[in-house]
Amino acid sequence: MKVGTDGVLLGAWAAVQPQDRRMLDIGTGTGLIALMLAQRAPEAHVTGVDIDDVGQARENAAASPWSGRVAFAQCPVQEFETPEPFDLIVSNPPFFVDSLTCPDGGRTAARHAVHLPFGDLRDAVLRLLAPGGRFAVILPTAEAERFLAVCAGRLALVRRTDVRTTPRRPAKRALMEFVRADRPAAPPADCSADRPAAPPADCSAAVPEVSELVVGTGEHECYTPEYRALTRDFYLKF
Image 1 (spheres, rainbow, N blue to C red):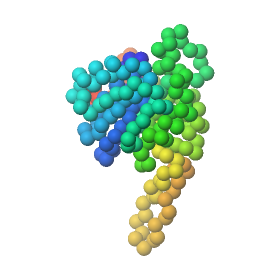
Image 2: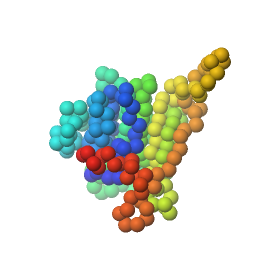
Image 3: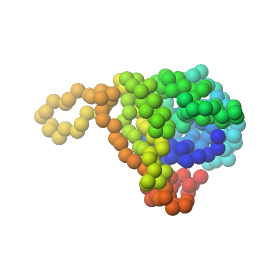
Image 4: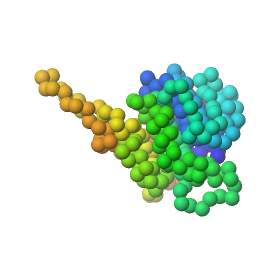
């Protein structure tokens, strides 16, 4: 699968924090998202993993300014091992669950959850994510609801952006950010110095931040200012 809007959206939307040093792109494909993360986090080392050949991803990284901080492994993420967990994990995964598969085996592997069922993706994230880390994913809206059900009690949704292609169309994609469900959520700020601190809340009970993004204005090839602002740095620098 070549570069598409989904990958660009996730690479630009995923929250990158100054303390992040290790990042993982599951299902890296051409290495697009891994390279976007390396661009956005000058101190981070980024790893991309894919069940298919990663030769093109390596070529793209070698031709980029960030080649020294990006590495790729051809390996099912279910078998991927690492000496240290990751601060940020992202994935633009194969997502179709019940739809008909394509006769092209490569496209089927890239688009259908055949080799990476949602339960396996959840388990890989839980195994590879640092205790304070985040996981960001993009999925079609129907599959997003399936994934939320699979993650219930294990990964807690903290941020979601529903994406419309134009103002008049329903949301087609959901960008979602998760943390471990057993990770304590930050308690609300309390300005009373003499009041005892409240115990940390459970992330699984926290209310996620929800927003919406419209990609196009409805006119031919005319993007909205919000989409241009989100992706501006990538297009100018890469």
